[in-house]
Length: 260
Image (cartoon, rainbow, N blue to C red; front, side):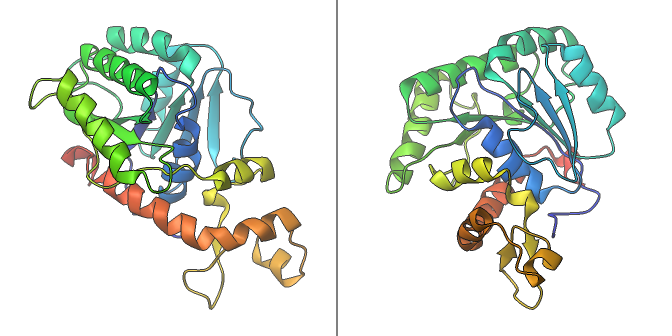
């Protein structure tokens, strides 16, 4: 598998006080596939077998113990980190980071808040962003990422997010918003969860650049592929490049200090 860069160690935290906006989809299908050997941190009551974690180091912090999570970010300072904060522990997480973060020590490089065009999601996204900013996180490290965008409604979804930010925040303040990137509403994600795979499980097919397989090459050669994976494979040639484009745009919002 190809990775975005070597010696690239961004610390990404994904959170929102709204449920159903795609936080875990971002963690396992947007960030994990394109970072080299990231540490996955899951905070809250996650079922540990709800998605594939093959070949990755993951820690499940079932309680809302912010200290435990922050200790891990220090221990694994030399590798990328992806933290996925469950909705029902977001408030405790935000309370905890307010006592831990200082303007010079925020621990994460970028806080990504997935938002849908639904007013509730936008409201809870802004609530989350405001609480982060109150905990000494600069606006330039908080990113709204439009998610679950329906086909044909891409411009409207981005416009809705931009408008609510303009209405709620003074000029020059508020969360960042990608110029083009968004996560589409796609049943493929549910199918992948059901099959226990994610984009990081893909391997490029030898002698077929740009073609991807969800099984290892020995299984492919022996024709032992599971039917569910065969059905999904045909959709990966579209999905992986699409997610990589969004990933690369999101990475442009990292602070300069974390890009080297």
